[in-house]
Image (cartoon, rainbow, N blue to C red; front, side):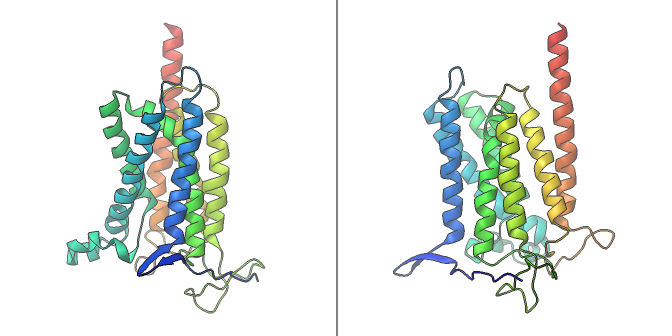
Length: 265
């Protein structure tokens, strides 16, 4: 069994203001995404400039925060929302959902594209390769905060989390950080290093995230108020991943079919 480092979730305290590691991880993720997108925008004939990259990061940040909160409330705590609709705005209590954040980013990219006269897939394909960086830093923030731990395990790397009871658990935040963050980033960065048809990058991201998240859910502790939704083993997170994978397969098939049709003309 490994020892959980039990890091104080508050990174900096300035008077009554507490700055949490989780928030700093978000800033780190957005900062890294900005620098990498700027690197690609500076390439000849990229079709992007510095101001557009800056605004795209801002739009996506708003989409992640607003969509993430709404997704957490509507996907995972809908009954509580019906009892108290204003709880949606109680952001100080925490609670974010990746799937909600993804929907928020989709809306943000639509708004950005409309302003800058760029197509939706031109925008989201450009942003997709750096999304895993936010997942990497976000999952690290989850680990530091001692939240979203895994199921009980007797594996030698199991950890006892301060709020997870007396038994060792899978550090599933680190599994997700590695798969959804590092591995998916490498896949996306390499895949998009060469010109690809529109929709292909988005499709690869949807499949990659969906498969990795679905897999880790087998060792991640389900939300206590939800448990298993289907068949006695399928979690809410796994259910939400299914349309992602199917949608990704559709986008890749359509992308390369369109490419063949254009090449045949």
